[in-house]
Amino acid sequence: MKACFMGLGYIGLPTAIIAANNGIQIVGVDINPKVVEMTNRGHLHIIEPGMETLLKKVVSDGMLKATITPEISDAYFIVVPTPFKGNHEPDISYVESATRAITPCLKEGDLYVIESTSPVGTTDKMANLIFSIRPELKGKIFIAYCPERVLPGNVIYELVHNDRVIGGMDEASTDKAIEFYSQFVEGTLHRTNCKTAEMCKLTENSSRDVQIAFANELSLICDKAGINVWELINLANKHPRVNILQPGCGVGGHCIAVDPYFITADFPIESQIISKAREINNYKAFWCAEKVENAMLKFELEHHCKPVIAMMGLAFKPDIDDLREAPAKYITTKVMQSCNNADILIVEPNVEEHKVFKLTNYKEAYEKADIVVFLVAHSVFKTLSYDNTKVILDFCGIYKK
Image 1 (cartoon, rainbow, N blue to C red):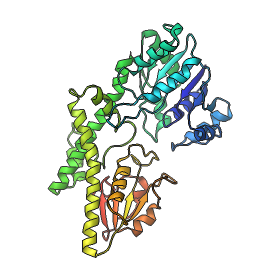
Image 2: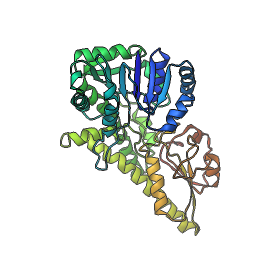
Image 3: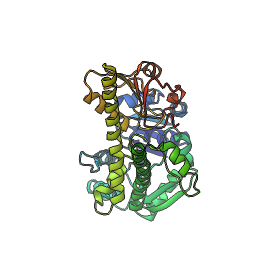
Image 4: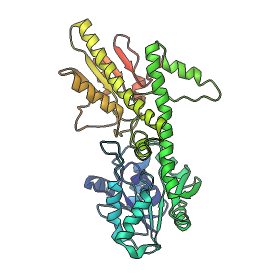
């Protein structure tokens, strides 16, 4: 079997590698020539433990190659970004472009699967698009939706062992998709229809967003009440049926910070809790930025000089290099814009360079700073000894006591 993966990003490339490592001939397609070139040299363009070793193996074995245009295959997987527009409406233009690109390659008996997080009804829309271009294929190809559900940093294990939800446009399509994924997925493959599978992905991430919003709201309350939120949550979680998550400086990433909008855009009246959770988590980042700005003003009034500030972390979660929708990035930008000529040191240990921010080594930044702002709980930050001569704003629980 030969499979074509449209999109070699944080999900598309690892899935293509795992599939290739299980004997499936893979052609990976990406519009970025640099990604294609790196992939064909066996170099991973993302951070994922153990994945580059597997990439080198499948490239050298001839099981995976990358190109900028699709090739005729037996199965096609759409694994491209689905961002939202300025008004928080989902943008499925990448899914549509990828679908249009592979449509000329389709033949009778082929499998077409969308993995990209999508609004409910997207699979039906893409099926209609395919059949409007290739009407002779109606009823002769298999179409399904199968969302990913992996954790960055543990992708190799989770792509194989996690359960998957597979929703076909009909029973035959579900069967065909299950036949493909069973070649490398050891978790249970759960059957459903495409609309339910689409909503399942949105539901999973919206649920997480609501739970994080509760923790973030608690942190706002505790700050005002003079209570250590980390201690409070630890004590509350001693209850056998309570499991409160940890607060942070907001919510980021291409899933939890985005997917709830796919529901609220289509169901604005019904999605009250989901919508409010998005507001709370967005507000938390704004609140953190204000706390930093106020600390800077207070320092300047007390010391009659501008402070050196270390903004610790830009990624959307600990120990990864992914900055998509990261609240830490928003907070850092807002602080920089509000404080002209301030000496702001920006730290992100998992990124070598950034086109906007000049990055500083985390140890150097911590040593030089008068105000240290912990935005992401990277493991290396936890090795820094607490220095009570500095103003430390800990928004992610580096020093929970």
